[in-house]
Length: 99
Image (cartoon, helix red, strand yellow):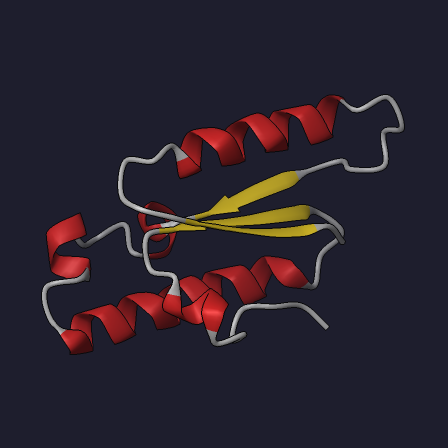
């Protein structure tokens, strides 16, 4: 399964870029990708505001855990997964990935 992890500064266009990539993958002539999922704070923590997700270290740790759990949920399927997040620590530490 193709997997992309997109990180960067807030409001840099990560979610927009992830959407463009997902749409292009779904429209590709090969037809090998039949679904695409974009994992973000909005999908992993819909009940919390952006401020509450990162207001202190415990909240950030909880947000990172929710992102990883959401990513892992889709990682075993045959869909294309993209992770779009402000928090780069999970990607840098290699905690997000597929076997």
